[in-house]
Image (cartoon, rainbow, N blue to C red):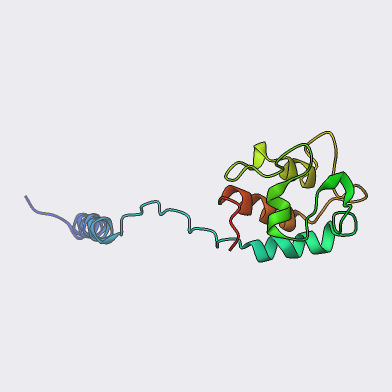
Length: 133
């Protein structure tokens, strides 16, 4: 069987396409899902800065509002007369988080919500175990 130049050119192009596609198919890297990088650990010092900025006007000293003193880690973890306000590892069960995220019946600070980044920091700290480090 004799091929004319047009047929030879079609066969050549088809062959090149097959070879090229097989080279790309075998040379492609497999994409795998990587785990999201771990968020940087949130320190209590960061959280204390948020409390200093947003809460200490009312929650400091010998007679803080709601008997909740947020001046120190010990005060935060002590809670108030009604009990604990932080449930380590569980922001959704922590009264403190419900108050600052404005998701409960009462909102803190009462005049204006904290910055979303500050709320996220408090949430991350509680989620990570609310540790004093």
